[in-house]
Image (tube, rainbow, N blue to C red):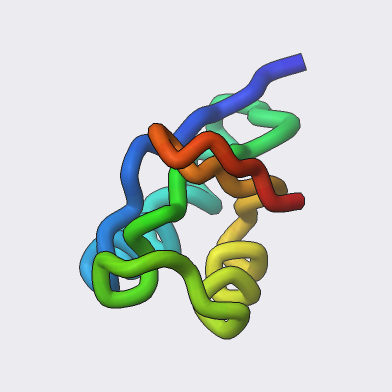
Length: 73
């Protein structure tokens, strides 16, 4: 099983990068499970339900709070 951990996704630019790069990387490397550090996704201040759904559509399976020690699935 291959697991990819994506470090701190920051705001809109970070989400755009994940949306652009993740699907191709997952396919090319045969990645089975993706975790993204997401405590700074929504304007650098947490993660909204809409942004969570957006990253899930891009291929993220679970979310970490990084140094905030939370995991969302």
